Image 1 (cartoon, one colour):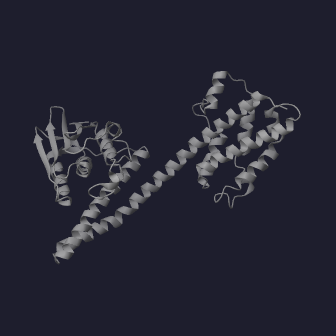
Image 2 (cartoon, rainbow, N blue to C red):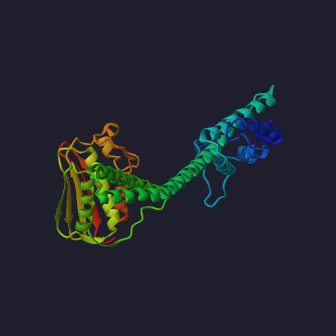
Image 3 (cartoon, rainbow, N blue to C red):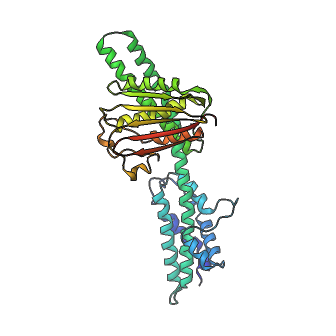
Length: 373
């Protein structure tokens, strides 16, 4: 008997074995009933059986074996995709999802080969069946991964939103204690709270912005008339207060005015300067050079220190990238590895660009911003 006919004839036997295996995938399957455990298995098998009886070229066969079968634009979800969606919402993990297909493949082939005895099974059916299962698995894994990513991003968004209120309370209370002038010990403690709160706020801002980009929302900017000399001076004064033992200089040339989002550019500059403070030579200044040209304004953040390796420099703006010595940095402070990624996204949102270069003399991050988007 050909495999497609066997699948349709012995569907219930196959589904019983699918259900039995799915019930072992704990803890997600602990309280699931038969219908939920069998979720879309019958439709997946019917699609595979239909595929087995459909003529296809060798090229199409090869594409399908790699999970690249063509999907029509506007086509509804396949049974495999719907199965992945429901499994993700039921708490299954991706290993369990893949295990279902692995068990299904073995179960169908074993039952069919036993049924074929004493005749030999059709080899082409075995190949075509494996291709069909591989395609269904690829469809399931793709949609499952999308669902997991979306759920994680939504969770991060809610977490970032809910953390803002208590953090603001901590910062306001610390500022109040500092203003009391209640003695050196209280002032020192308040200062530590203020610095820690500022760092937490920076990490939280980066996390929320990263989450927006992952949700496809991009970095939100509100351009107004801005003087970079003013906004950069404010940001550098804040950084000097947080890092009183470090030297931060700014050099201004030309006209620094344009139409930008001032707070976002402060965030961009702050991320670049913090990166320079973390990885630059502690006994050398961090220099910010702003140059106003006719159609754009350029600014650079320069620091001395070890050169960044070329392999790292090529991916320096990728998210979750950190320096090779981040575990043993001088300041002892952790990082999410999002600062440079957020800096690039802010520059892009303004129609600008950012680049990095590094040698044994210095490391430079250069940003170019059109005066008007």
